[in-house]
Image (tube, rainbow, N blue to C red; front, side, top):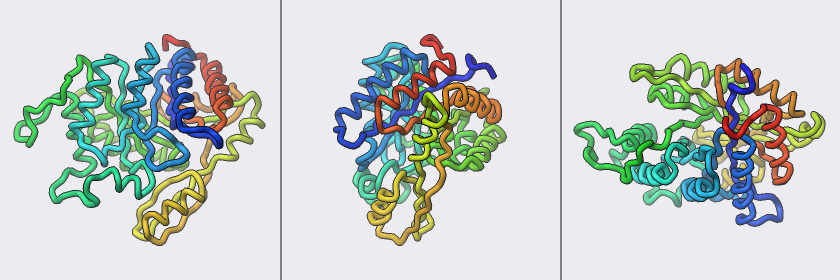
Length: 343
């Protein structure tokens, strides 16, 4: 696979560095999106986090609207909207507005996780427990897909209802995940799939997920599989410098007494997460598997992964708190991958 065939995109979490304000962190996201467009990145996605003092992007739709107005060509998307908390109808309305304002430039990535600490995600829900008969998260995804394309089937309770405005080109829908289960759901629904290694760190699970997606993809409607990887990436002028930055990144996997597992990025966050659940818990520090090094070495690694996993697009997630270092990493990556603004 040649460099020109591999699309490179960015997923930004609006991180706030020590001593910075939330407003500064969001201004950095705006500047990074504009630079990404100038450097030839294919997409720029923003995340959804709640109750975090580390990442400031709590409302991707609002932030996307501003980014679409401040850029001209690059695709802007969510990585991703945590659909379990919301009405599919309202999410479809929000993204139909965006798609009507910026036709052909809007991506709707859906995440299956809670997207935040337990108390904040509880506060997002009008009722602590879902009402009897309410749709499951997977059923919500199907309903969202139908609302976006105005294709509610006969007999659906909302059949005939439209999520106005109906844009000439709806937002493209993607499913993000970090398990083989999410890959199987994306395959069943014939959706593009993004495996989030930056959330998981488990190379083996990435292999199982991507293999399941390709193997089980539903081609009955003529769609073709579109798998992508969201990878932790750090590029610096030398391998040693990049290795030093990568060594500071860790993944902390929390296991609750109930058996549920969640991922955070510090032991302090793990302890607070467990405290808010009220359950006994354990946590384990895992390697982040950051792809790091000099520009040439990172480019070679990304191209090798793209060939191995049969993907033609990679999202780089560069979790450097220092904004200038983060900018420099993305600029070096753009040059190493020979990106162009018309990619």
